[in-house]
Length: 383
Image (cartoon, rainbow, N blue to C red; front, side, top):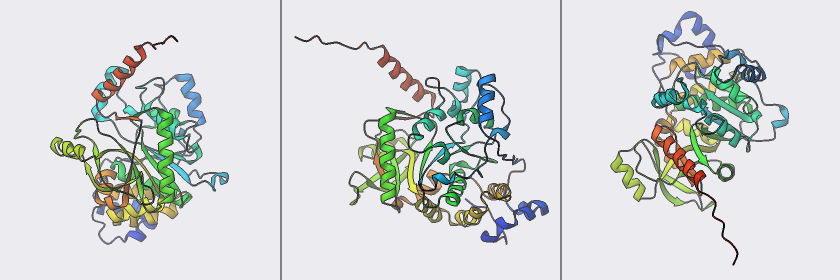
């Protein structure tokens, strides 16, 4: 949701970011007085790995070890049109006490080893690297996430967008998408959260691959993976389904998108066959861009001016301006919910999925996994 830009034209505003910063023209936008905009410096993540191995997972890491968003894909990747965009910018506020009890420190859950020896971020990127290499993987992180993120991204992700401040998923996603649009405008992009549990991994990857294929075939549609609800959960988003698409019968039109309904409405949606929104989304740059334009045309106008600045000396000033000039934008509430006609859904089949946004969900899955591990394999003797 934009604030008032007064007389600043959307298409000229970003070309004047340096002048605005010098003259205080940002004051005309409604911004947080304490907003800090750290620099993005291009230094290889390999040095982060060396420190991680030497000092361990609780080390303090200078953000200069992050590679900047301006790092362009190598030319050998030019013929490949798939990207992964991983969202790891959340603070995980609801799980802070749980994380403190388990790890003795407060940090966002996506950087914690809640399952096995890898963090949720690492699990996510390892799955997605089976579909796209690190050279075409971008991860969005929070302002102060550098010390946690850098060692976990080594070898998994070559492009990092560290947000100057928190403006919700929609803003982060579309600024990152603008960078991909600059580099590979015909790309198929898979957007994924980094704090979800899925199993088995191989079957999940196959279904993400299938969703990508549908998005490549139907370039005007955005494909969302949906999970079959096990209960009426008022904290999740729901996809209300319509008729199967003629071109791909296993994919259904989305009739409505309901974010965090009441328990009563969630119960009704379940009886109607609605799916939980996993937020795993596949679409062409064009389809995602037009979704943004339909939902928030002013934001896309601003980002159209930002695209040619990606990779230039003005990139950081432009990002700073955008984050100062705009209020938070939610990808689910402010984008998807406003344009269901642009969405189609594929159901995850034979895959366990859980949004680990509450301690109870984590403990439920871990308890089930422990119980399965304790059940001995039954051998049946041949007659």
